[in-house]
Length: 291
Image (cartoon, rainbow, N blue to C red; front, side, top):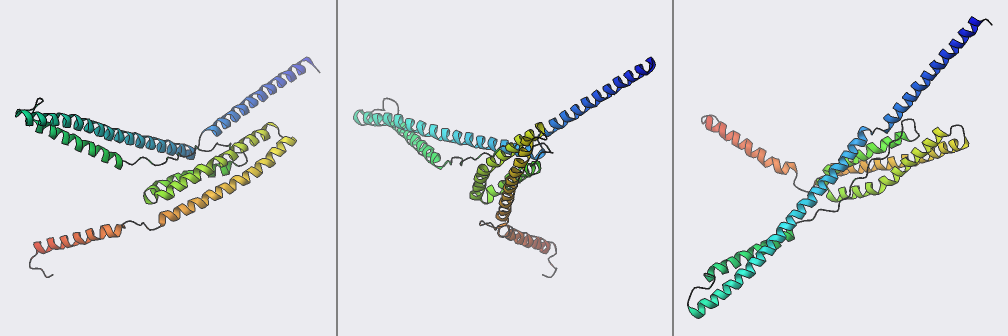
């Protein structure tokens, strides 16, 4: 081989090596981008987390409002009792002084102190009554955090995403149920609180098994991880089916008749009254028209 031929071959090899290195770097960038994208929370996960944060914030506001009302009632009771005790004592002393010396009491007219004692007693009674009527916030069951996110190519990723959507729909159903059937809404929250963590644990297992398959391809351990992931996926699919049944029953509760007054009972009399009023206006504008 001539010198020129060897130089050309060396240049071609170097060029091929550079191209291969560039392709490798490009593939690494693509893999890194896919991994970063897979770690980003989905829209359903963000909404589910926002619903949880909103529920926690609402409960905190209710607790603070309850504590403020209780403290206000406590202060009113203690203050009214103190005023009633002090004013009543001074008033009695003044009554004794006025009765024995026929003079105005030492601390002023007795009626003024006795009146202040009555006002204090009434204030204390109102404070105690208000304190008894203040209702404490109910037992708070915070929604469970969204499940972990699997990469799109992992076994069970579809079921994981389905579970996230189902739990989000359940949280949205709880909003009207809180007004219509508070007891049913509390029961649904309890069920979600108990069922979601074990299903999330299944997704965490799938994440570990997926990592084993990618890091040990073609080995017995990788094959075992793939088979185990299929079994876990089946269990996760059964959990999603149970959540679908739960949503079906929740939809039935929303369609059930309301035990309180219906809209027909509330609006029908108003519609009839407005119709009669409009008819009266027409009669007043045209007194000669027939009925």
